[in-house]
Image 1 (cartoon, rainbow, N blue to C red):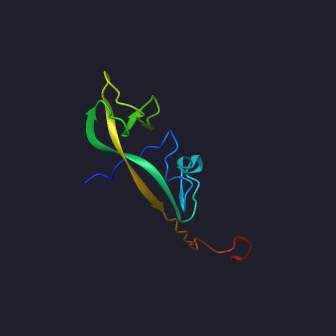
Image 2 (cartoon, rainbow, N blue to C red):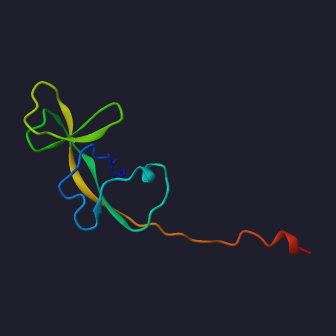
Image 3 (tube, rainbow, N blue to C red):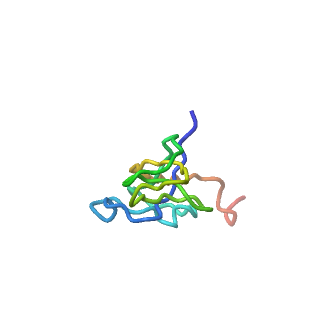
Length: 104
């Protein structure tokens, strides 16, 4: 089974900024590790239809999650659900050689 794809929220979610939940940070997309953080992202539900008021949907040339403030009629979108992601970064150091100045 493939890992789910996650999408950044384009709008503020009510849970962001409360407790330890943060919005997705641009540094994560660049691969800069941050330690032990929790954030929100969207993942596809498998449905493609007109979003109803209160649902989250995927849109944009660079896909992001948007919150429907009212029923959106006329255009189907991929429906997403908001999930809490926890990222834990582990750093391991390995010896890969000797000090070149002291090799004999």
